[in-house]
Image (cartoon, rainbow, N blue to C red; front, side):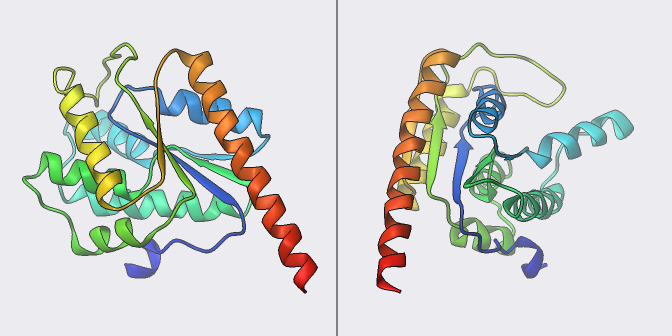
Length: 199
């Protein structure tokens, strides 16, 4: 199991969309992938849990989370090899860990917990709750959006993850994200040039 949760090394920038449900993460992931002509790693939990709901009319349990985490890392590691300079991740294992703690009384599978902390990313975009709530089969906490947002932010702070909060409409969020990513790409390019000059 440990091998399936391990993040494979890749010489690309990895950006994570992070935050409560129905805050525009998937929309922005798609927009950024198009803008940078790269691939994006979708949220495996949605596919897995929608299929479970359709087939069994049952919702997520804590036993599902390790399967979701394994599926998420399989997607990320596979797409890391296809990405052009940057991979946009619609979620990561830290988000799964936060949901696990919030929904199951603090429970987190030990392997999930380990890799959620060990896996690294260049930047997190924390999506604020100023987007309209859109109900579906899986979303279930429309009245606890601020509490969940605060929980996600506390996790980023606790584990010292670099993050920027995104607020506003789709155009504003996209432009803010692009400005920040462009700076990251420029810094990486300069670092690569410096490394080449030393070799």
